[in-house]
Image (cartoon, rainbow, N blue to C red):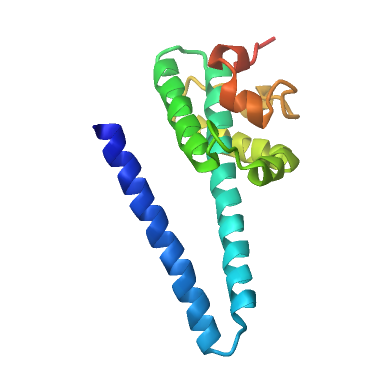
Length: 166
């Protein structure tokens, strides 16, 4: 029942977002902008927002994988794994991962994956000061690990993605 309620609420939220787009487009029409142009502007803004949200989820997955890989203590490992699972679920819903994957967003994320990784490294660095068990960021790989692709970060077993320290 909980899943059905969550799904219904997500549908209502999506409908509300769609109605807001139509309303903004119609307001632009009232200001003299042709409807097609106003609607295309709304779709462009939505796509940028979707990509931004997806990139954020992916960078958080990478951040927690870095923490799993470069922590000297296992105390927080279960928490970080739960966080990865949660971010995967959110990203999966966002991309409709289990059904009609949004290939455009996935492709955009693949093109920007190096920047997403750099963002994850920045998030890791921020948390070094709060967690004395995280190794200094100088131990992190400078380049994106070759095994980390959008698909692997979503589908692979977490343990397979954890990096081995030298």
